[in-house]
Image 1 (cartoon, rainbow, N blue to C red):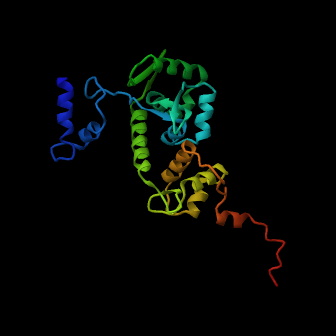
Image 2: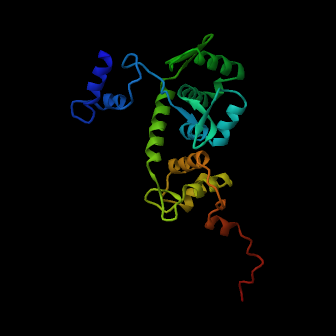
Image 3: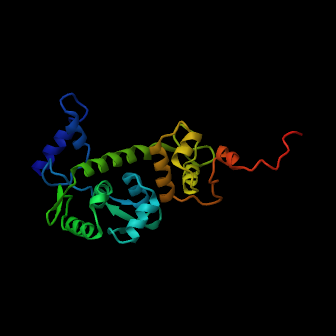
Amino acid sequence: FKQKTAYEMLRSLVGSERCPRELASALKRPYLGGRIGCRMSSPEIYPLPKAAFVLREPVREVRRTVERKHVDCQLVSYGGRKVRALDHKTLVFLSWARDHRDDLNAALWGKLYAALQQHAELPTHLEAGVFRASLDEAAQQVDDRLQALRDLETSVEHDAKGDIVLKGTRVEVHRLAALLDGGMAIEDVLRDYPSLSRDQLAFAEAYAAAHPKAGRPYPKLTAKAALAQADLSALDLDD
């Protein structure tokens, strides 16, 4: 009780000149118990589309990892339906694995993930024989991406027609997701929508996967891309 009270007193300093930036960042997270300063897993779990955003991977790649049973997932209610989701520890492990894929084989992956599952909270490192995996950098990357996700989730709004658009634009989130799903490269989409960022595109893909839109689907090409692919050879341009 005393520790939690002290923690809440420290949180009251956030935003003041007496609170260093590093401490302010840590104190913005909710109190989860335990010693202040130790790394603790978020109690939240993340549907696969959100996990894909955090990992900077296409949704289909994250789904493939889960379907191959490389990691465990949970079934949760989200948006009125049952979806698969990953916990914070698994996100950190997948982030670390992505950056060390050249060092991993199936056996080592299995041993490290089994070691992870033995911990109730996120450990600072994992060991398998003589192999040691430090998770601190991956954990920081995941935390940064989760903050970016939270920021983006507040940057959508409904337009006059009721469609979900990126705030401050007229671009429908599901339209962008349809372009990526249709096979357009991120660079090509950004060329046609130069005011958008890569993170906004990744967020649009994650949002649309988590919140499917009923009704007529959006086109899978931008108007510029469709014109570029059109066969104009049959037109008599001299007339």
